[in-house]
Length: 90
Image (tube, rainbow, N blue to C red; front, side):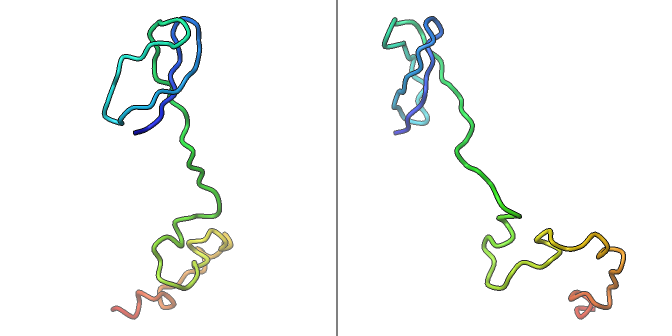
């Protein structure tokens, strides 16, 4: 069961109703009895930091400068493929 906020269309009262996620009941205001509609709120999830995904599911080690956003802006200008790890695959 999940809890949802509803707002009365007549008096503006906000209240909670608990029902299943797949249910769509006709909800009425407990104060005046008029129809109420579901209130949609922003998610409680907050993504903060310099790239939470850099360490997600990664096996050990630390993020590289290129993926962590700490590389200087001139790095792309001095790039040479002979220094790249993929060069060894050729």
